[in-house]
Image (cartoon, rainbow, N blue to C red; front, side, top):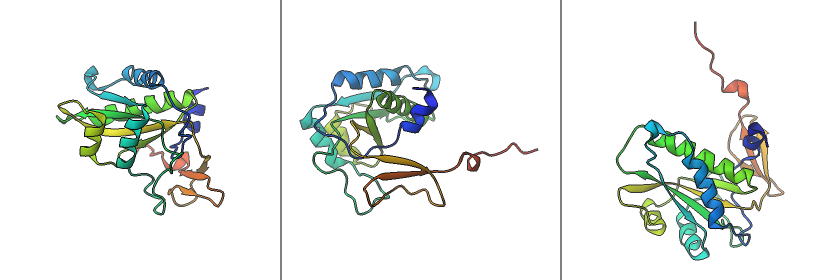
Length: 191
């Protein structure tokens, strides 16, 4: 799949086929993609926790907040929950490039997952202290991002934004993701 097609196919998935498990080895391949990614000063400061066992997934799931725009929805039901996660840990010591490093690493991870046929959802809305305990965050680090993975259990429709950018579900329960047109993102150089 060409890169642009991969980017177009990669949407946040919020409902999965929970019983279709992902092997830890598969998550390690996604993490290996992030390992190869560029990072600030080549310091390679991020750490990753792959989570695949049901008991560990069931500890992490209730600590996450899902789909802020879908105010009436509390997240995936049993049977739709992610069968795997990767927790990305960042150093507690602040460095200007860490959020950029995390963004690059996360993009590599989710695109590797998509290329392998899996969906993902990046989640930053969670109880940091509880995720730290559930994921075994190393000393000197804090959990920065949780990425949920699985075989998609919902249809996601990419569409051009016609006004608002809020994602929504239609009457057939398809998840719609409005994206601004390219021309709205371009800032011309000033003379």
